[in-house]
Every structure is written in structure tokens, then in C-alpha cells.
Length: 330
Image: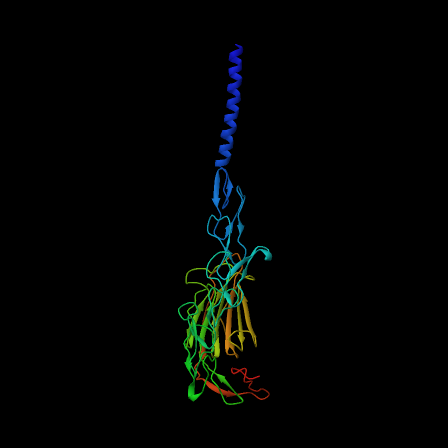
């Protein structure tokens, strides 16, 4: 009987050890891995745009601005045009002007090639004014030939100076008589950001939209459309955005880079009827920005410019032509 009691005690001990191992295995197998949330009975993948980097999470965290993730992600990646900066609270910050980044992730921004430029947060570079071509292909950006010009950045062709006007190679304007400024009056549409857009040159009318028909716009985006020409008109059709957070801004500027002579025209958010705006400047910029939550049907707009030939216009009274600034009187 003593032997039987000892055997029974050992058997009980082994059973306890076995039970512990089974319980540990069950706990391990029921653990919700990073990228999911829930409990041992149901692990739910994090939605796109959210993440969790811990096991058995009770919920997922939204990606920071300008970052994204796919469903079931344990981390977020910086969108093209943005780079990870641990010194800025672990956020995604835009590539600086003159650089670009065309892939997802936290890799470095790449400097633009010679005679090319970019704005902050760019996914590519474009040829500077006075240069034409494709900044990322073949010979890259080449100078406009003598007696031709190109006033805007982009891949558009150079234009022959009208009326026997002259221009040096690589010029952004043709040369006018003293006291006169050159007005190219070549309409164009330039754009940046993930919104749909087809750039154009020499076209006097067109349309723009925040997203494809029948869809909604995206979170954490910034889109710009710059319309250049004589007497720019734009009509924003009835719009639907997240009120107070997703915004349409309309401004006029004196220069193609939209840095001088700002003329604020409107800022719209929420819903509203159609509205038409006219810029007394030669360049009109529409900017659409969104935050990290709630998306709606967005907006559409139409635009047109006055058909007007290139010309040399006299400087207004009280101004003069600075040879260093061939495109405007000072």
C-alpha cells in the first residue's frame, strides 16, 4: 500500500505539471498578436489607417498625420513626400523644398536633379522655369533655346517669344523695352498631392475635383491646384466636407510660386452652395486639406481664363522695371 500511495503521489504531481503546460500552451495559442485586438475568443485585425504594436491589445491606435497602414498592421509608414522624424514626436514631416520622396516608408528624401525644383512634401521634382523636359528621365531638364521662354515650373514645352521679342537661353520671360514688363498670358493648370488632376498648358478652361466620382476623399491629405493666366475665374460647386476640419481655401498670388501678393478670397468647410471667385492676380491657388478622421464626398470645381496674347505692358505710375525682375514692375 505504501508503494501504491507513492505512485499515486507521483502521478498527481505529473498531472499538475502537465496541466500547467497545457494551460500555458492554451494561453500562448489564444494570444492576440500585434496588429490585432480583442481577447482569446476573437482577435480582430486593426482597420486600415490604425495599428497596435502590442499583443492582446484592447484597441488600435490611429496612424499620425501623413502616415498610413494596411489592415492588420503593427506599425504605420510615412506616406510619399514625408519622412519619419523621431525628434518631432515620432511624426511624419514633409520633405523640404528641393527634395522629394516617391515611396512609402521612413527612407530619406532625395535632392532634386539639376535645374529642377519641388515644393515641401513633394513626391517628385519638376523642371524649373526656363527649363523643359522630365526631371527624372533621360537628359532631365534642359534650358529653353534662345528667343523662347517658359514662365512656370513643370515639363511643358518652351514657347517662342512673340512679335520679334528676344530672350536668352534658359529664360522665363521675353525681353521688353525699358519701363515695360512681360506678360506671357499662357494659361496653365499645375497640381500636387494625391487628388485627381491632369496638368495642362495653353488650355483656357477645365475642371478639378477632390476625389474620383462616386468615392470619398482621403484622410491626412493636402492637394493644391494652381491656375495661371489672364483673369482667372473658378466656381466651386456645392461641397461636402467635415465641418471645421477639412477645408477648401482659395487665394490669388502675383507669382507662379504663390509666395508674393497674396489675395485671400475664401475658406470653406462643411457644406454650402456653389460660389464663383475671380482673381485680379495672374495666379489662383485652390488648396484642399483634410485631417485624420471622417471623410465625405468632397467638391468639384470649374475654371476658365480670358484668352489674351503675350504682350509687353507699361509699368504703372509709381513703379519701374528692375532688370533683375523681368516678369514684374517694382
